[in-house]
Length: 214
Image 1: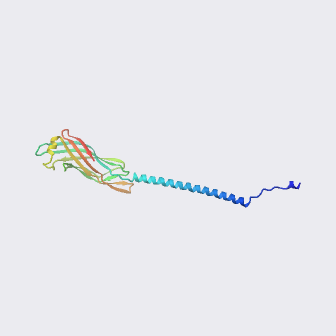
Image 2: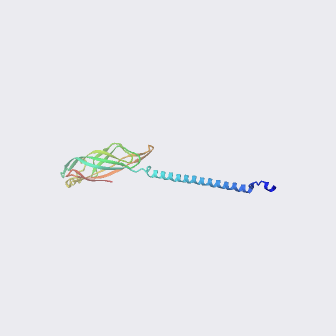
Image 3: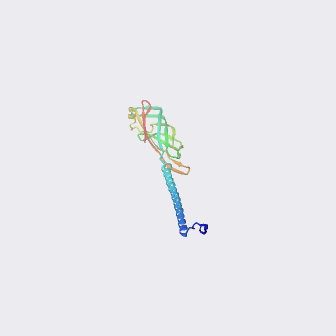
């Protein structure tokens, strides 16, 4: 009967078992902390790569400043007078023209006033005057001009009489547009687009046969 009345108590964990559990918990905690650190490092690395790509794309597009393009877009003769004499040949004409400034940059191109000399056989016969202005970012500025040209300064020893009798006259227009491209109201870069155009005039029909610009 005495044996039946004895109570059974659970065994207390030994020191070895306690140490093992604590070590296991510590290792598990360190593993979790290591995983968190690796995730943070991965996020930082991904953000760094993304930021580098954005900066590189920004530098290659927005900050890469191109030279605007400067060209004749249209030319129409308003008045044309000729003298085909072999001794004193001459011409006088007025034409209306449209020039364009194509700005491909992400900031406006502000240019100074200038004059585009018109030449025949290397001799200046007129000028196209352009006021100062601005071509907005990623756009094309159209400039309208009226040009008067005359052969008063052309030498009598030139091929003018022969050209007039052939029915075609060739003029050239060469010039430069000095200005600056402005980015974010902070950066300014000097740019000077140049124009070199050849204009072939049909004297009989009093029209521009063709023109080419480089």
